[in-house]
Length: 219
Image 1 (cartoon, one colour):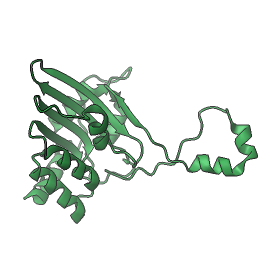
Image 2: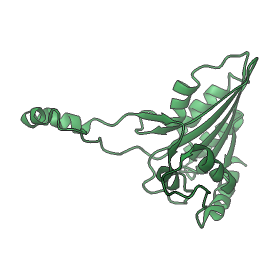
Image 3: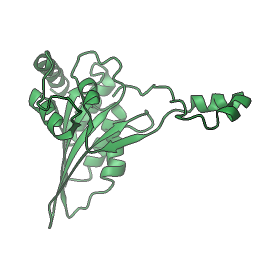
């Protein structure tokens, strides 16, 4: 997951502008405050999907993580929940937010089959959180599908991905069919937008590239 180094947004209206102008120190403090927000919803904008999920080798500018999830809970009554998370700042990544807000606790009497479709693979800290959550919960199964590998050349990231595998997480690269599934089930179709998924030119080539790199890391 890339660093979230986006500067803080300016206020949306003019309220308080006069006061801030009179107090330069206060204005400076407001500008330097980092944005912090976890965006949740059922469907993400098509433009976000096309840019953030594209499985390019060099992901310049893609400094946010989009996580689409399906949670199947099996018990006396089976339930299915789906949605997406989008992180806005490094203080809370989407993977961590999932366990904090979407699935904060696991009932040992239930079975959870969780599938994530994520724009890029987790950072080391998030991989640790995932592994630490899976370890004491054999009733929780996680299939993690990623569009791109984040900094896979780094030894720390490679160790984190191996830890995920050892913890029971099934990790694989998103195939063209997986991108199509996300398009159909998690993307808001904009007016005038083609409803059918249109794969980009190098989608299969990039999938094979990342699949090979993941296999090298997890061998």
